[in-house]
Length: 127
Image 1 (tube, rainbow, N blue to C red):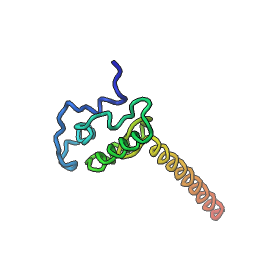
Image 2 (image 1 turned 30 degrees about the vertical axis):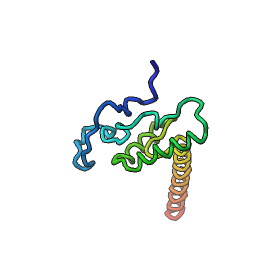
Image 3 (image 1 turned 180 degrees about the vertical axis):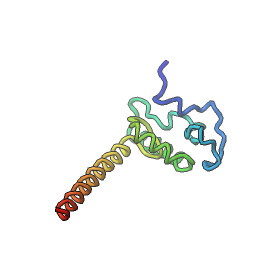
Image 4 (image 1 turned 135 degrees about the horizontal axis):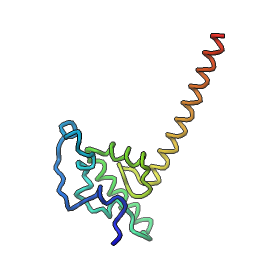
C-alpha cells in the first residue's frame, strides 16, 4: 500500500503532547510537537486530480492548522532545506516554497556580489 509522502511526520494515531517549545527536550525531534500530527494527513497533501477550488479550500484549512502550531518555523525550514516538493509545510504550499527558495537564492547571490565588490574596493584602497 502506498503511503502519502513523509507520512512519518503526519502520524495521526500517535497522540501529541503539548509541551511549550522552550521546555521541550532538546533531543526530541521538532515534529513531535506539530499540531498536524492530530489532523488528517489528507488536509496537507493533495489527492490526485483535485479540482482547483477544492485544493485552494483544503490548503487554506491546512494553513489555519499551521498558524496555530508551535513548531511552524521549524517545519517551514525543514521543507525549505529538504526541499519538500508536495503538500503544505510550515504554512506554505509547494508553490509558495518555490518562491521563497528563489528569493533566498537571489538574495544570496546579491550578498556574494556585494561582498566581492567590498573586497575588491579594500584591495584597491590598500594598494
